Image (cartoon, rainbow, N blue to C red):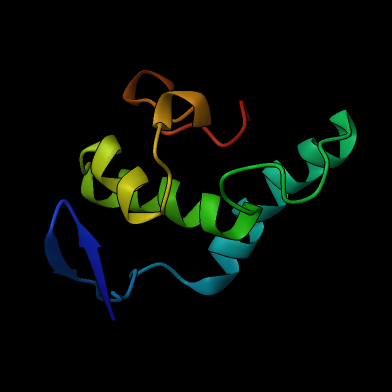
Length: 94
């Protein structure tokens, strides 16, 4: 698969995160529960709970640039998403 941006064609790829799936599923339940409690409409967030957990785990594992992780996840403005190094890659303030 490829993406064209600014006249350049970029190559996309998938990677493997070396974290057991049950850990990701457990972490995904945290934002999912909070979103239910506060009444967040479905599909109103940039990422669903599972992809949100993967983004945070990637940040903790690699200490990658948050803006790069957000870009990889398809988020244009990670400030509005609430993921910053100051929050330790927060999972919806959990």
